[in-house]
Image 1 (cartoon, rainbow, N blue to C red):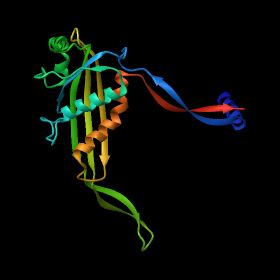
Image 2: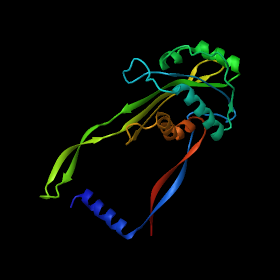
Image 3: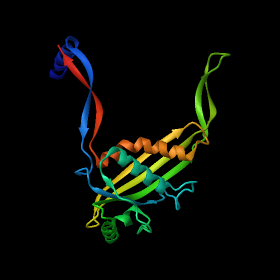
Image 4: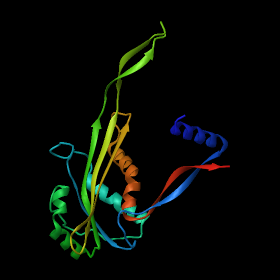
Length: 228
């Protein structure tokens, strides 16, 4: 008998005699940024950047970048003790894409001096509403002869795609400290689902990742315990 087969037999016998219990444990997760928790943060500017091969951002009835900034401010107020500084008037982004923003150290250093921020949180966002309505093949059993057939069925769906590049800059030097890409896709069965509600459904799904950049969090995981 091969050694591998013998080991499998011994392991199988051990599992058969051992008691098995599934438990849920809570594990701490360190934040992406190592902070004291009381730093002064300046949020913005955020810009809407078109990606996925499109020349211009999709036209919507609301300002995606402004809504994201407001949401992030509310989230950090609720989940952290970080000091969120008030926005300054007339601040214009130095570029229109994430790569160019990361190279504008002079701009971020000047903004840090004006606002008194330890860190500046900025970046780009792209939100797409996709009409995914189309025909799909489904299987059905005929009530007449009991045979299985295939047919084309019209399925109405709307997709919501959020693509964010969150950047954190040192307020004293203007250097890029962290760049974190975040993506989420949500699909709804309705064809004319509300765009604004769809955007926040994406943000709620990304909430744990956003919080995890700045403050410690916990995750729940299941483990198997072997008992006598």
